[in-house]
Image 1 (cartoon, rainbow, N blue to C red):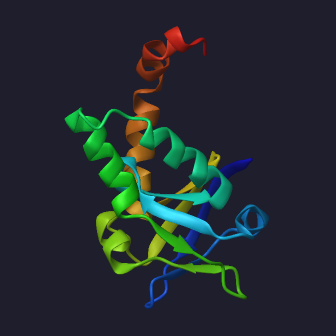
Image 2: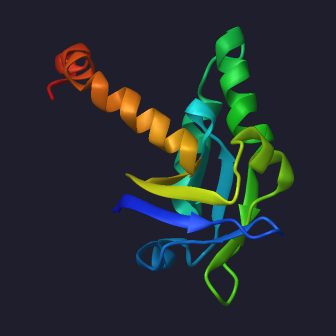
Length: 143
């Protein structure tokens, strides 16, 4: 399971280290793509296959389904960990997520999210301030 919050830096070439405790999950590589809230999603290859399977089941006759599929699939790139456990994040994905030098890698069960550190802090503050309301809205899910 991928969990936790890890602060890292992005080097001038666009590389960052994957947290050591996550590396075994990405030994076969990973897929990085545009995520929600202007962060990036990183999936282990096996999990990515499940995501693609679900996305391809969406009805192409619906505009939002097509848009979502394009968001996830068109911008996706396969990445390999180098000998130091780093991945290269392409410029277009760094631009999408507004990644600067300081980033945060967040484990979210079956994927990681890569955030600009300031954006992550703002997101956390907003989410924490609305935690009770969020919990009430998802209460119907049995949480």
